[in-house]
Image 1: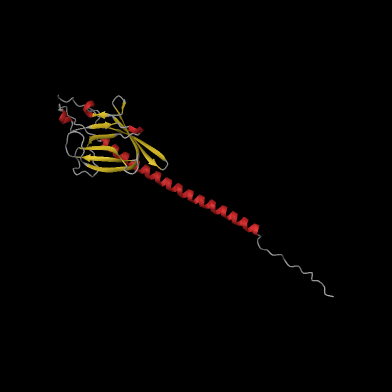
Image 2: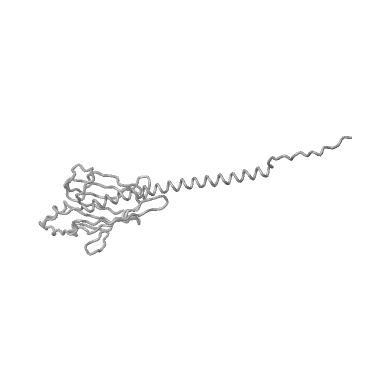
Length: 230
């Protein structure tokens, strides 16, 4: 009679279907988490880069405007000028807030030079204003016009230069010697320059708008012209 063998064989060590599905689910969760963290980090890096670019643009623009305004020019002699002679020099700030959006403009005589003038080192007229984007309503480009040729009144000629894109608003406030603020300024009426000019520029930056403000002090603000002869 044959004896039965007492030797035992080990059971199979393979994964069950439930264990395999559980492992796949855990791996999917891990991969999803890693991908989300990666794309979120990439998105944050892009956002920081865009904000840095906006801040750099704003700094350059504000620095340019401060230099122009600081060098705003008026003749310093006490000679009685006619109205035509006086109109060779100008400082005209126009307030435009139609549609609840500040689109101010400023035109003035200055001695500054950014290196693009055909006649460097001379008195010229500089103007800052907004030009609406043809494809995006409510978005503007900040323009700078420079005309070094002598002329009466505000020029429509000269060289135009795009200073910054993606502008939402431009607000300019004028502060006189009594620290009174005005939204407009006309040299022909006031016969002097404002003591300070505060410029606030609003730019788009992702989903939020960012505003930058600077205040320029005008060196020749103490000069007061004589009223023009009739």
